[in-house]
Amino acid sequence: MDIIRYNDDLEEKWDEFVDRSKNGTIFHTRKFLNYHPPDKFNDRSLIFSNKNNWAAVFPAAITEDNGRKIFKSHPGASYGGLVFQDKVSLQTVINVVDDLLNYARDQGMDYIEMRLPPRVFQIHPTEELDYVLSYKGFDVTAIELSSAAPLYIDLTKRFRGDTLRSVKKAGKAGVIIKESNDWDKYWPLLYKNLMERHKTTPTHTLEELNTLVSLLPNKIRLFAAYHDDKLIAGTAVFVCNKAACHTFYIAQNYEYQQFRPINLLFHNLMLQLKKEGFDYLNFGISTEAGGTIINPGLFRFKEGFGGCGVVRRYYRRRIDRDEG
Image 1 (tube, rainbow, N blue to C red):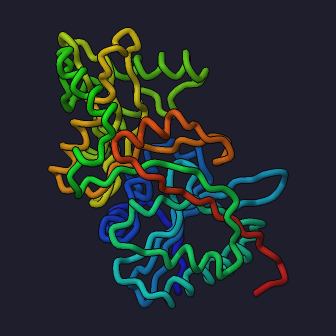
Image 2: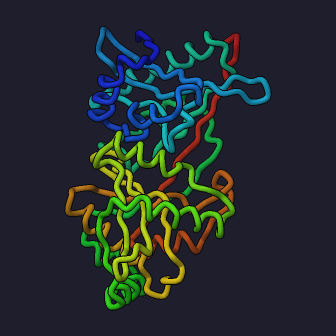
Image 3: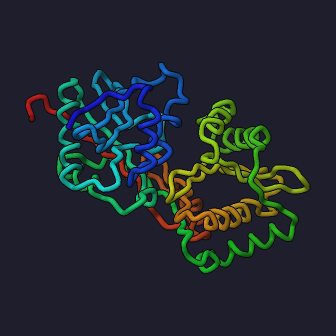
């Protein structure tokens, strides 16, 4: 394989490759990654090419930990790892991982780390990479539990009884769900929720969200609940690829919690995404501290919408100078 360092002249070709791949997501695209300031990460993204045909790309950056150089899937994204062309062979996956290991060693890296997306983000079932990483000596250092609901079935049969009752309660209370552009009304609600309940702030500022929305039209969407024309709940929805969407930043005005707006919001959102042809809606993780702490109440809430447990794995391998 020829290994090519990414540069901005390759942005369009890179994103076209990710769009046609079997396991790429919005988080692997340059349009998403490049919204970060140029000096925020030491970007070292790579392209693996075989006779001028791209076989794989690796959005990556170099970080340091106690003097050790770590070559890792891009820190500016929720998910990362190698992205492969649609009809990649097992041997090609092996070759790419071998070349990545050799490259990391030649560049003086001490470790390689990858954070792979859950399986529901795969256009086609493809676990060759997981197998090859294990085969080549990578360890799973963390497993986080997320929840994903299948959309290709009769959704009403998947919803739990108490969830459906809450959905009906919201409807009777006059809650209206619609896709919205009211980011300036939603973000302060999100900020207040995170500060009051978790003593933290959103990963993205309102300005960054607006930038991402403009860079990725129809890929980052806001679905909101309204009561008497007032926004009382909402969630950002990232269209990850043709297979799945992912909810981020669920927020609500707790003065209206008795109306159960979040329940109706998810109910209507799932029906809409099903109509648009997506297979899964991922609700995000229900664990903390690298998967070592479970939030059972949060996971049970997602189970009410037919959510099933899916995992995202963290892989890590030490690079020995004398191997190869």
